Length: 225
Image 1 (spheres, rainbow, N blue to C red):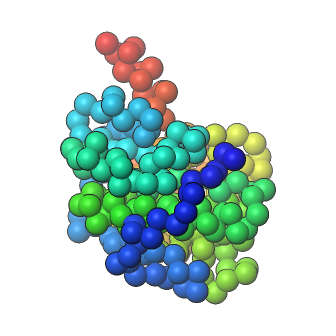
Image 2: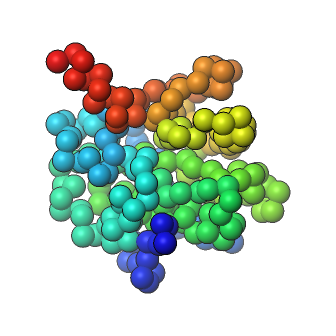
């Protein structure tokens, strides 16, 4: 039950949303300006935020750590009142997941992102893909992994734990290539490892902003202190 978010459909999150494609994925608005956060703080470590105007909450961690938030984000909105920047939830898209579950987690992420935008947050969409069915048009006339995400804007991706094996690296680069072609983002935040063999060839297409994973960031900060 590692990816069980709902006891029921939280329809209030998207009651005023627009939708894309026959899967009806909620669409997110592009921000009026590009804001690049200084630090990425996992949701479970949110109390460690020291500058809520420039630090971003992200969800690059195990799903159970943010299950309650994704299920009913309304219960957390007061706690996050001072937080300005937040990514959309990084709901797991494992390649061995059934396609319906991968698609469902994409929809869940967009739904929460839409709600956060309606609450006045600066939302940086997280782009996550699973197997090739999610980042190609093999089975659909559009690309499910990027459905509902704004084009020519800013997105965030997580590489933490996603580039260890040769197979992982292949899917990371294949999805990255597809994302850049489909969304043509002006800015891409990369949370986790930044492999120049993968990202270097794409640096003339967009501006990458590498943010350290939380463990490395905290370790480096202690070394400085």
